[in-house]
Image (cartoon, rainbow, N blue to C red; front, side, top):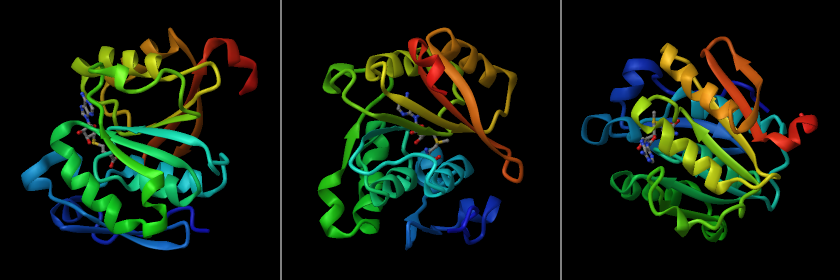
Length: 216
Ligand SMILES: C[S@@+](CC[C@H](N)C(=O)[O-])C[C@H]1O[C@@H](n2cnc3c(N)ncnc32)[C@H](O)[C@@H]1O
């Protein structure tokens, strides 16, 4: 089981490449990318790759667990979580959904298609479409980057999480303002760094509602 999977033409060249290729959960995954037309949602970010590697290491048991992914982009993380046994609701803004759906369909065997549902979730909007507390895990890769969305992202996490729900967020801290989101998160959840990839400079944080502090 490789900790660091391979990506063809990573970095800038990777951004321009229409395909990013990875090996996870015993399968080769080929994600379509379109940075020029669709921007941030249509390239695979290091944070997703690192969180996939963390999950593949067996850090959490995803078999038959209910997962929701926020800001899924190309869908790599949701695809890998499905391959590792979870039932996954893979979400993003409306504009990203068609591209996301095509990657999910192309990379999952047909028998797993019913276990991966692509749905619109714009943070803070129409949250009643998602039953509160219905998920065992909330995943997000590189979704802490727009300060104007921090309040809505936090509101979304608060809506989705029961006391049992575990949040896993992977991110690169690019600016001091990114830490502001973590401070906001700590006001409502117990937050711990569980992994750091120094090569890619990606942190993975685990969060759970305060009363479960002792479980970490
Ligand atoms: C940097 S990309 C990360 C994509 C993917 N998670 C990855 O790591 O490869 C940020 C993602 O957050 C999504 N996003 C940004 N603002 C959002 C919002 N207000 N509601 C829902 N998704 C949002 C974008 O569409 C994009 O897919």
